[in-house]
Image 1 (cartoon, rainbow, N blue to C red):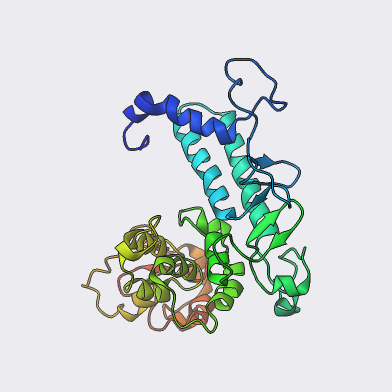
Image 2: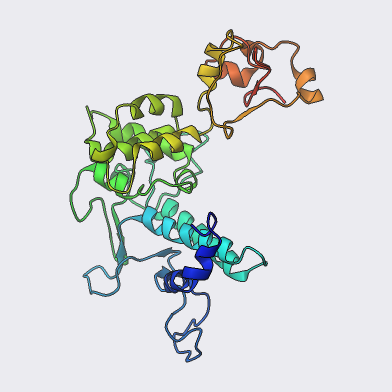
Length: 324
């Protein structure tokens, strides 16, 4: 809102600041300050600097100490803090913005370390074998996602059920621009097949989330799935248009259809400008690396199954897979 309407800051800035400082206050580390700027806010109220992530509970005692179920909601909490600080302090270099980025980076790293799991038996000797932490026992890693991280234990369940769908998707909501950083392709290519294995369908309330995660590894297939979404039946934090927009921003979306339609140079592609396509003239290295515009002459294009003309297409568009 502040980016669209500059008067928003003037009218509501102090109110949003109060919410911001309740989670991302950067001073008053000992919570004893009586200065006016600190008296209401402790430093990073929810963040554990020792553990490297946040805890959602703290008001009430639990047998396993503090705990956190939805790592993705925590990530988006700090993502929101970063976005607000970048608008609130847009005119000056701000330590507040940098501190928000630090909190966000810590939370993303903490989620990948303590929540995301890939069994060693699946990785084997692949190049991904050294990319994942292995903090838990092999049998527990078979869940691929931790449901709840406590100070004294971890659990593969949620407070509302034990279905793996709940465990995985409660750690994916909400779907925003930061989702792609939290759920990288190297993780999703193992996690998504596990989640959907032997699952004939997903209830509509959760289907928008599973479709969005699928888009990270196969945006074109996810786009087809999304056509069957019923917006008013999705979870209240999601809409069909939001899912479609998220899918459209994933690398590789539309590339296959670009090649299939390359023979029709007069037909508009109708794709957003943010797709990974370029109409710029090729660099000298592009000319040197291949003497042919066919997809087959460019290994990256061929490996994705593209056929026809790629570099450039008949509309003089160089796909992202073109040799450079």
